[in-house]
Amino acid sequence: MKGRIACSADRLSLLEPAMISSVVEPNAFQLGKQYQAERRVQMVDASDTELTSSVMGNSGLYEQAIRLTQGYLEAKCSCTLSEQPICRHGVAALLEYQRWSKPRIVPKPRAVTPRFEEEKTGAGLAPSGDVKLSELTQFTAWMQQVVHAIQTDQPVPDQPTMGAGVVSTWTQIIRQLDERRRAGEVVQARLDLDVRDRDAMVARLTQDLDSSVKESKSLQLICKDLQREVEQQKSAVNKTSDLSRQIEQFDVEVKAIASLLTDKSRRLENLADTCRDVATMLKSLNNR
Image 1 (cartoon, one colour):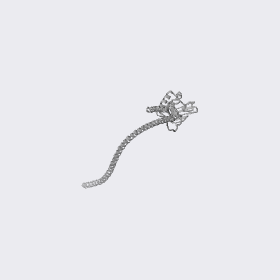
Image 2 (tube, helix red, strand yellow):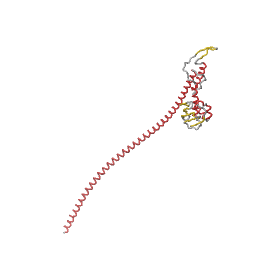
Image 3 (cartoon, helix red, strand yellow):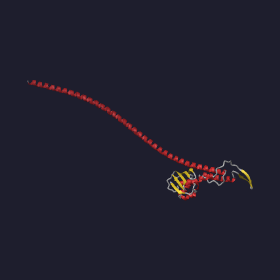
Image 4 (cartoon, one colour):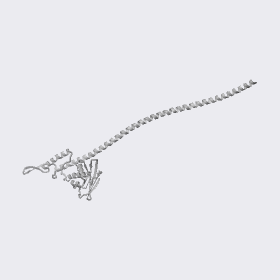
């Protein structure tokens, strides 16, 4: 998503929620306000004219870049929503910047040790000095609200109005700690999402590995069957070779016998011729 709108403000801190609501879609503003209240926004970097952030949406983590330049407010978000000119994630980032930037106008805390001094007043003794009793009362009441907000997972309430001093410094430190805690929760949510994605990937890889192992076992069984068939074929070939050698030897013997019979046949023929000659001679003698 990318949007651009004319803006007369020269600082992002001047963009109050009412101003943001007047230029964005009502649904986008309500969802952005909900995201900001649910602490889904993490400020990455911010200045008076430019900020970068990330927002945990309902479908994943999205990154925003918002800046004031040459009288225009430009907003970019990695989401694909059609909300213009600023999507719900950009609204959440701007609202979070408003909350985030307010404590920064508190004067720099002084490094002093809290102490009480007593001075006389017309009604008696009243605390004065670096820490006032009224400020401590406000701080105690505010701390009760802070504890309740943390226990119910709600945003820390705005700090009470008081002058610069030690108590104001305490409230500032507490709000900064809460900001760090919220940022840590966003990071933790991102890490949890990454862990879930990696767990899903590991599950898929494990399933693929199991399938590969089963396929490998099946191929091993097929290879063993083929090896048995090869051994059987080798045995049959060896038997065929032996039979072929036996046939060749038998052929040699048959040829030898045939040659012997041929020789004896010639002899018998010669003997038969001799017998015929003798018979002829005997016949001729008898005729005489």
